[in-house]
Structures are given as C-alpha cells and as structure tokens.
Length: 120
Image (cartoon, rainbow, N blue to C red):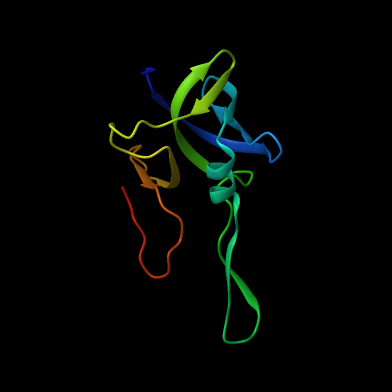
C-alpha cells in the first residue's frame, strides 16, 4: 500500500483526453491524474428541464476553471495520482463549497441528487 495524502487547490484547466486536471496549490501548479470513469463522472454538467421548457443548470462540472477541490491520492514523480483504498475511510475527491473566515472548509463529496446534499 502506498502512503496517501490530500492536496487542495483551485482548478486552472483540464485535459479530457488524458483525464488530468491542473491544480493551483500554495506550492505551485500540480497535474492531477484521475481514472477515466472517475474523471467523466465529475466532469459532467447536471441540468434539468424546468416547467418553462428551458434547461436549467443545477450543478457545473467540478473541474471547471476556478472550482476549489480536495484530492486524496499519491505523488508519482511530478504528478499527483488520485487514489483511495477501500479499507480507509473518506473519498477520493471533495468539492470545497465555501471557506469560512476562520479557515474552516465546507466540503461535499457527492454530486447533486435533487433536494438532498451530502456534506462532510
């Protein structure tokens, strides 16, 4: 088993072909590699047709520019690979919804599911 750690930062860009996200952290820019299934799950935009017949966006991609995320994984040379062991608790990816003035983070680990939201 590899030693896992968490990094957080702001998304600068993404590469859909390589399933990577460029993340701006306090130490610089880090490329984060995801598995293709996991990348496509969180790169989707969730929308719903309203009563007026128009599409309304309920949640944008977690990898859109400016989104703040926390990634659990391991370092592999110059890149960071998102990874989570089933025996360890937590999730592979969190979205930072807000940062309070005292530095506390409000994290979310699941996508939009209607009226309920899971907050950690």
